[in-house]
Structure formats: C-alpha cells, structure tokens
Image (tube, rainbow, N blue to C red):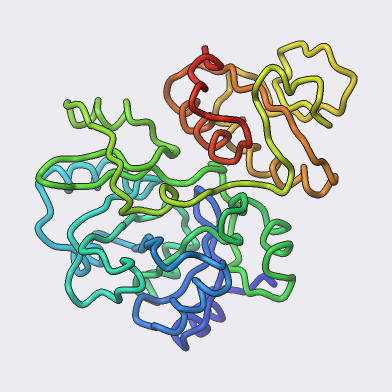
Length: 314
C-alpha cells in the first residue's frame, strides 16, 4: 500500500512501521525512539536478536547525536560518500536502545541517497531500517517483493525504486583503525584509494549481513561445473554462449556489473515464482570492484561449497 510523506510520518511517530525505499534496497523502518516498532521489525522479519540494525539519518548532525569518539577520517569519508551506500560502524552513545545495537558498544550508521526517504527522516528523526524481507531471504528491490513477504496492505513510502539492487558496504572504526566488514555497492578498493591506506578484513560479527545465512531463495543455487547439466535452469550473461536447452535467465552483459547487481535479487525471487528447484549460476567474473560483491552474494545464497570458489572467478 503506497502512502505519502504525511501518512508515513504519522505512522512512524506513533510507533508503527513503514517500508522505505533507499538507493540500495527497500528497508523496513521504525523510529529509534519507539522500542515497540524496533521489536516489531525483529518479529516481522523473524530476525535473530543478535543481528544489529543500521540506523539511517538525514544529515551529519543527526549522526553525531548517536555516536562518539569518531576519528577525523570519519568526517572525510562522510563528506565524500554520503549520502550514499556506505555504512560505518562507530562507537555508539550509551542512550541507544540495546535492541538496535544487539547489546554491542558499536552502532552502524549511514545517510541514504534517496530524496523521499531523506525528507521523511528529517521529519521523523533517525530510523532503523534493515532490508524489507523475511530474514535470510533475498532483499526486496521491487514493490512486488515486499507484497510477497508482508502482504499488499503494508504501508510503503511513495518514492522511486532502489537503483543499486545490493546493500551498502560496511566498514568499522575498531581499535583506532578502519576494518572492512561487509561487501556492498562501494568496493573496498574505492575506499582504500580515498583513504590512501589498506584496510584489513575483519571477522568481527558487529554488523548486519555477516553472521547469518542471507539472500537465499527457496530454489537451490549451484555454481559448480558438475551441476550445470543437472539444474532446472541456467543463469548467465547475454554475451556468453551456454550449450543448454534449459530455461535461461539473463543477468545482462558480463561487462556491466551495475546491471548484474540490479537484477540479481529480482532473479532470485523469480526462481521461486517459477517453481524452480535447482539453478546453476555462472560466477566466472572478474575478481574486482562490484563483481566481488556480486560473487559474495551468490556464494551466501548458494548450496555449493564456497571454500573453493576462487577457481570459478576470472
């Protein structure tokens, strides 16, 4: 159910929940000042309570009211990448609801690049907004995805659909250095070039999308060569040839990672709509930039052993 800014503001300030569009994916939003709405998010998504939430802000002033002890480089990153698909994990203030932080001392924050949602957050104050999907399932990038998960009567803020199709990149300021926590729209290499330093990967479970299985359709996804002829359908690229008469699902051209990213979760949803049981996906892609995030999302949704996936990338 599409609603306008006025209606969305009323619902959120009264402790309800609204689905909001961002440039990455749709988010299931609630006010950080309404504990019941935060609890409802966990319940509706069937989300593990140990999985912290990202807070979305309209401006830097709002962010600084929720974090402390930020480094100088945070301001440079914020100025360059915000509004945009970068989430930063920082020291949180003590007054934050523990349901948001999963009891951690850190909090994940970002300013989304979406006009209608920014206007709403200016009116309501900061909103927690994990992806609008049942936990573990593909993130919602279209209204029909939301309706499949939450029904046609759930309120959705009027605005343009997500244009990225994948979630934000997450880095964290831990022990006086930046660490890389989750692949996303912005590549690690881009952040490193901007900062002029290398950033190490971290196994810390302090942000969404790292601790639990994510992005999986009901259909089983495989990428190993031995499953190519056993699968019900083939997923690949328009400019490649596949010797198979099975149904073919296109991710676009292999030289257009933005289109591949935009189509990925929508295709995951289509597998289930078309009642597919086993799907083979071509992951022979360059091991760089946005391609790395695409491969990582496929691996997280896959039933193939991902320990040897390096042999499948170019």
